[in-house]
Length: 137
Ligand SMILES: [Zn+2]
Image 1 (cartoon, rainbow, N blue to C red):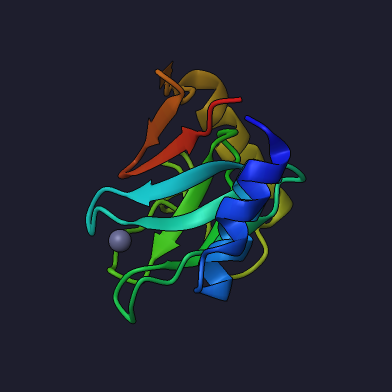
Image 2: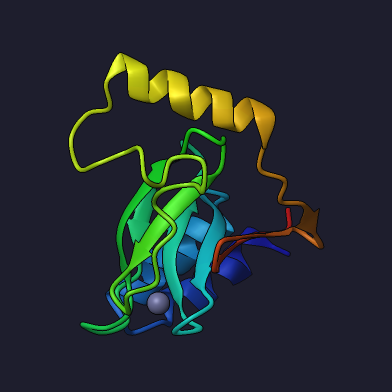
């Protein structure tokens, strides 16, 4: 598409937040979105540099936190209560504090014995109640 036409379309969007988001999508800055399967909403955007920025739908829908888990997949916490911050290998070992060396060794052994396998289908990866949906180039 002609960039001038695209820019005109974007300039016609009244909501400044939506205009900025769509400009980031059009410019390739946002590469994926995160959908919560409990509240069914898009709760975050993933930027090309890996940053995850909340899309707050309401007090009960939006990304409260995210982290790269030790099983290699991203975990999320949604305002609706849906939660995948810890992988199954971390649960029962990781607490709210920094894990100890022994904790990390236990988690590493669990990941080695029973690695997580989530596959991408049509650009979407479902992990423990959340879907990361890639935007097409
Ligand atoms: Zn949710």
